[in-house]
Image (cartoon, rainbow, N blue to C red; front, side):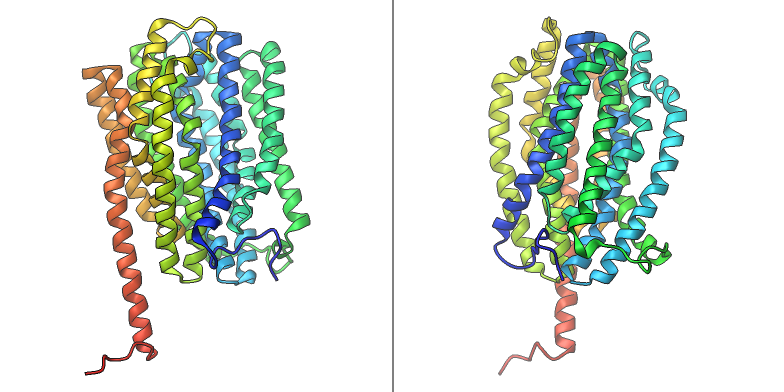
Length: 461
């Protein structure tokens, strides 16, 4: 028996399901980026341009590690969505239990390893000497909070896999407000460590709220003793989908790390410029993230129900929404890029404003390609073909690595601004081809199955 909080996307209007799931998810992403944005604004205004550069210099490595954890949790939620779509609630609960055990193990191991290697990584990235100590303080605290990040993303991912995209948002709103309040207070007493601890504490609160709510409101998620034991068959299936999704982020981020290293060599002003532009861009890219999350859940449920036609319809509507928004975002960022950059620092340099505006213009011009990356990639992942997402990530890594090693040293900061668009275009070429091949294969298998049971009859002659 399903719970009233769940949403079955295997029937009804695909457009309504997508819009209904996407909007609450979008609000969640916006607030998640909003308090990340507030972190940056508070650091820039209270502590200055060097501290802002210190936080910015950690962006690529943070994305590589935290991105892996978030991708892992998203992947773990896909078999849960598929079993929910297939109405196999016994297997679904076993996947939930094994996902919790596996995520906890990953969280512990990753935290210990990256915390110990933190300073070495920053030195390897050529982090400028005037900001490296602040960068270490900030990122090491965030890494200590990895188990908290996994806890929240695992809990919210499970709820989304059952079609409930609203409840995680409510808890995220609470944690966002708490984060902003703690930022303002703690930065004055703890310096750059304050906003980092504020992020960890607020995520801890939202994670506990999600877990408490799931236990009270989702009857089909109430685990019994028979669900709890670790089952390597389930763990293997979780790892088969989850690890490639995590590696997708990490492999993509390797290129970003190389690119960040190239920008670091240009100096702290360029680091601050790219950090400011990236924070603004990430806020405006939230609709693409929401569309990706929606596509994963929608395709996962319909794959479980074997509704291939509905997957195509959902993909079409996601792309239409993404392309329309891309035009809107480009218009705003092209005209108001410098105005948005002024929010971060009291007295920004002319070079910082120019560089930030350049980054935003070049990136937003290619947002439609980013929309395709997120939508097609997550649709493929929701269908269970996570290994292909890794290959798409490899194309992005190659593009950013080429930009970091070749283009930036030759053409300077302008090349850094075009690195991500180049990565999106290359990934799209692969993903579109991969999706077409997957659908062709699945339809062929479906036709063979129908013939074998006598549903398809020979044509009358």
